[in-house]
Image (spheres, rainbow, N blue to C red):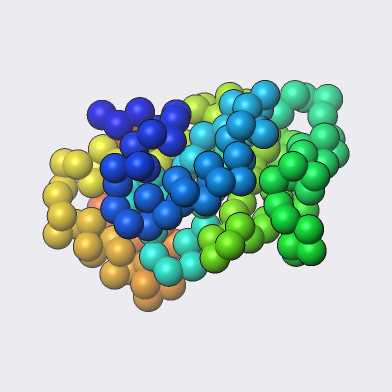
Length: 175
């Protein structure tokens, strides 16, 4: 199985993965965020991204951190000057969370921080479950997922539709 905890697999991936690797390394995103143990999750790693898909970077935040330090790192060390950035704080799964949205070149970036190791966050767990399903079901299934996504259906609901899951967000975590 691919080790999704590093970016190395992107170098040998499809052209969009290679482009993601290029942009993430050019801006030193994972180097700057290293204290937060960042992991790229979502659709890019498992090759089901479509035009407009964002790069989901999940991070492990300290429980006392309100996101200001993470936000400052993104503002001061990652994104170029005059780049739009949106920051939101919320509770996801009962955990205090921060989400930072920005663009690096043509790629939308979403940096998500929560007081939980990245590999235990739902985004990573969903991705691993989806990856295994894609490996088992093959290329035709993968293309069906991509086609549903192109029609505007989010990733987990697309898997849910094809697998007959009642609550795909919860049920994928059980697979």
